[in-house]
Image (cartoon, rainbow, N blue to C red):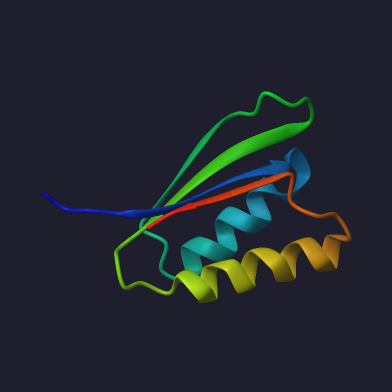
Length: 79
């Protein structure tokens, strides 16, 4: 059975495509989109293999949020 690490983040709806595109280009194995309990946000659950570039993924997320000048609402890591 394959194990995965995951990052779960609630993002503004208008940043979803940017984040999914950037993470997909950087080796994320998969992204699951679902409704966030907060209005105007989408919950993204990003999966990647253990030993993957977790720090790189977090750097990408923080860079996107800094550029958009909005902090992430929820950020959870499961490793």
